[in-house]
Image (cartoon, rainbow, N blue to C red; front, side):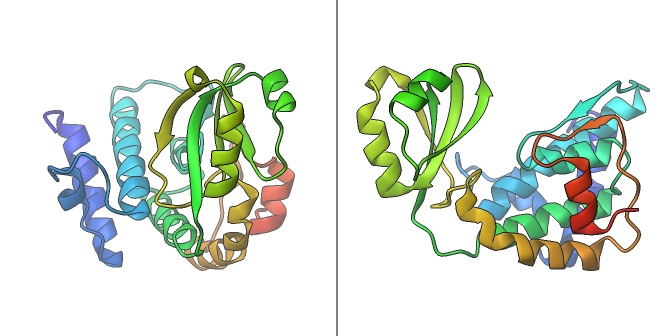
Length: 215
């Protein structure tokens, strides 16, 4: 918080999130070593990344390309000018709120596993999101993930992700899409044209335009 621009960005974000009764400072300043809810994790993550973006903008660092991953896609949209700060934070809020609603017994793990190894132990109920050629996040129902992990060598299992019982990054979250789109269409009244700077990692431009009626 010693950087003025960073501190001011966090303060502005905290004021915005008060509109949905989210206390950003209580989450960021908590002595807990882990987050209590999915919303706490997602929103604090987005606010910190937005603040870093504001600092980079202040020092006039020009972006050639911008890429986000997972909820970081929202920050990429903000950094590329597609969303305002208000829209970005409330987008993250509604994604987190909708994602937290399905009753799931999901599980997520970081694993060291190549595409070839995944094919060898492939399970239709376990889903991979590759972060590198040999590093991935797996997700699915807890029982299916546990079964898959037993087939891997223990050394391949890096760590469990605290995902609040959700199988994020998997088709199991598809039931939240409609609720998220309804919320975003109410929030984003005049969508901006998608920036060529923003390299989207989740959905192609045409599909996103169709979903949100971007012009």
